[in-house]
Amino acid sequence: MDELDGLLATARAAYARGDWHAAYRQLSQARALSELGPGDLSLLGRAAWWLGQVKESFEVSEDVYHRFQDDGDAADAAMKALHLGLLWFIRGDVVIASGWVSRARGLLQGLPEGPEHGYLLYLDACLALSLGDLRPARETAVKLQDLGRDLRDPALTSFGLVLGGLADLRSGSTASGFARLDEAMLPVLAGRLPPEWAGEIYCTVIHACHELADLHRMRAWTDATEQWGQQFVGDAVYAGICRIHRLQLLSIEGGWDAAEPAIEHSGAELVGRNNWVAGEAYYQLGEIRRLRGDISGAGNAYARARELGTDPQPGESLLQHAAGKNDAAWAGLCAALAGRDRLACARLLLSGVEIALALGHVDEAERLCARLEETAAVFATAGFRAWAGHARAAMLIAQSQYAEALPVLQAVVHEYRTLHARYDTARVYELLAQAHRGLGQPSVAAADSATALAIYHELGALPDVRRLDGGRLPGGLTEREADVLSFTASGASNKQTAEALFISQKTVGRHLANIYAKIGVSSRTAAAAWAHEHGLQPRR
Image 1 (cartoon, rainbow, N blue to C red):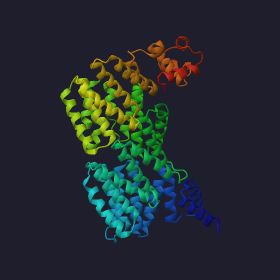
Image 2: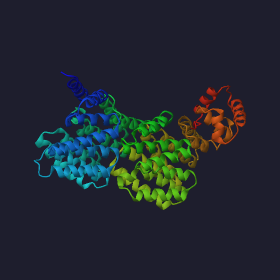
Image 3: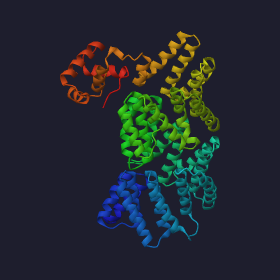
Image 4: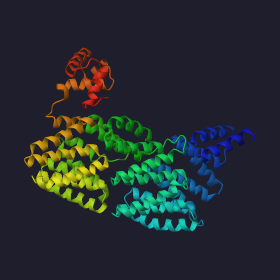
């Protein structure tokens, strides 16, 4: 066996076991020795994609497509076009994906029905769903089930179950929808689908769980996806996607210190590879920054999310509301609600109720609250139930119906705790404090407020800490001292802090001396630890 044959044999074996690094390296070496055939060149393009080398992957895969087409191999050319359509779709470029799907459709016309036709049906329906058209999903689901059975192709059967499950979920048949999605995952877990298509199904299922606030199922499938991905060496795409989903869950659970830098890094890595998930990452980054009081950082993250195709609502409106830009906040939220279907609106409605109440729009708040309750009744997930109860309790308290609000709030606290939603739990304790205060139970109200404040301190939700603590900063610090300490806690030097705050280094030194005296420490390390303990957010 000569050198070329040896490289190709080891490269094919490496690809078969999911070692993308070895496959890519050996195929690249083989390509330098001789022109590769379409099959080996296709493996090179796919290995490059798994390693995150998107530009090279597309160039190589397009070369393979043209070779199949030049050789008159319509079926293989169509399958490569569909493969490219999938990768562009994952990247978030729907128009280009649609173009490749159209090429495949043209090539398959007149050919006997085979698996390629099923892949075409699936991608067509996915593109329609991305544009909000549900009808093709249900119709295609039936066709794919029949085709998968006739051709004994587990991938087509799985595609049919995914589309049928999504159609059920969006129409409110949550139990049957998730049952179909769970069943669709069985051949994926068994390794019976091409890995790129298997990964796309994983992402679809986890996104559906997140959209419906079914956090228990989202955790379970994120765990399963991570285990599935461990078989591949050098996976830069789905490992990054799983990391984002894991960080979304960590953010809900309150691990903001770890989540913020990790989600910023992971989101940046996914740009150009999967812009859908990268946009979700930047939105989550904006949420953490907003809740920690980093106004400009939150605004930048929301802007980046929008650039990547993710509408940063309701976070952007909540950020504007916190800054006193109430008209802009309300207008932005109303515009977002007007452009979404019932399921997509669910995530906006609680914020809409809160902003409407703050503006005195009680009738609008009631309308949005009722809409959220109807949505929760239809989809019946724990997350939706918690949001609906939270909104109704806010309405009852705004109308001074404190006794009626108490059982609703207690049920919501239970739901949020079950979901491990730490920040939302604190918000409900604030409402419990208002209800108990309204019922003439000041000691119980004080305990509720203390619980909320303790959670806010733990999370580093500084705006909420200041609001509940009478506007006072911890340790008796002034606003400027808190700013200096925040930069110090992030590792900034006196020079960097001075430049960021437009003051002299001498002034920074004087502030640090006052800070050390007030909080009883003698070093920058101890001061940083104190800042973290008391909820002062490190500044970049």
